[in-house]
Amino acid sequence: MKCTVCRGPAVIDLRRHNANFCADHLIRFCRDQVARAIADHAMVVPGDRVLVAVSGGKDSLALWDILIELGYQADGLTLGLGIGDYSDASTATAVAFARDRQLELRQVDLREDYDYDVPTAAAVTRRVPCSACGLSKRHLFDQAALEGGYDVVATGHNLDDEAAVLLGNVLHWQTEYLGRQAPVLPASPGFPRKVKPLVRLGERETAAYCVLRGIDYVVEECPMAAGNRHLRYKEALNALEAVSPGTKHAFYFGFLARAAERFEPETEEGKGALGPCDRCGAPTPVNRTVEGGDGGAASATHLCAFCRLLERVSGHEPIPVDLVRKGRVP
Amino acid sequence: MKVVLRNPRRELEVPGPLSVVKLLGRLDLHRESVLVIRGDTLVPGDAMLADDDEIEIRPVISGGGVGA
Picture 1 (cartoon, chains in turn orange, yellow):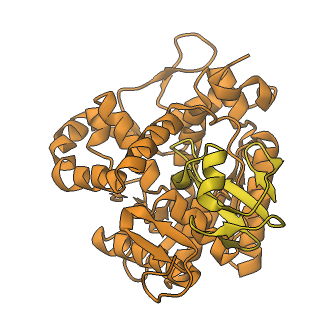
Picture 2 (picture 1 turned 135 degrees about the horizontal axis):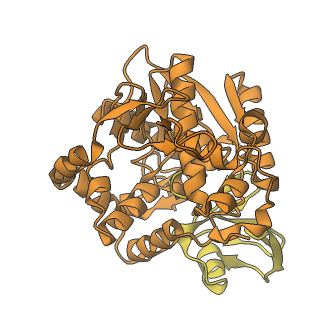
């Protein structure tokens, strides 16, 4: 098998592009796809300070590496989620990546900084772990970006992620979500711009990029994500991709080009008015209040979802990962 | 050859020589869902693997869908 570009020995074939690449041209291909996504969707403009959401997995480390190689000013933020050995390894990997490249990595640890962790939050609130995790990540990345003066938060969502989310939203006709499933979410008061520069790359491509760049990433899967619905959607799409290469790309980019804007009115309707959270100041729907104080008819407080989560779980005795796996609660 | 699989990590002995495509077929693995690694580089589908090779087959599907 020969590289489509230089005719040297190829190391990977990408059927959806009907192309084979050597190591150098696979790396160049990945950078070009990210540069094109950034340009096509006006994700980052010159002078922007970028905060990369770094998990220690292949996508976030590939993204950070590519942004730096493309010349962007990009720092990282990693969250200690408290998911046992998995989180310890993820944090250590992110720290080593930043140290070896002399990059700035910010760190927040849920247990140290907020006195809870994801397994405990999932168990106490009876949310599925990915829901408690996602809520924490969204809030803390927004907060860190605003406090740190960053213009944009970049996440490692790739084509497989976005196609799987789209499939889930279509299967359940989540029309409000369909209207905001875009590679860029513009900044609004209290929220930084959020971008997904890997949307043109599949996860096999980001994994290959890491191997060929010598990037050490966490291969192990999050023990709490195993068997979740998102992974099942990915498997279904991969089965279609196997018989019809390019299906995922056509599904996602066809949606963006020909359908996404039709759902925007419903997303706008669902937004409602926002006011600052009484505790942290984050924008929060104003029609949501929580009875505060000692259970009497004291003043109602207006709290964001993250502060409501903290009210329930902060200080709770830690609940081990193996009691909370796959959304099960003790 | 020694074949290392991940998630969970385990090792197999598979007689070579054998092409990558045939090895993956024998293990009932889909080519689009894994990378085949020998040393510090990738091995394409049509490559032959020798009996004394050490190979890692690494899955690429990941994620909870809301993460980084």
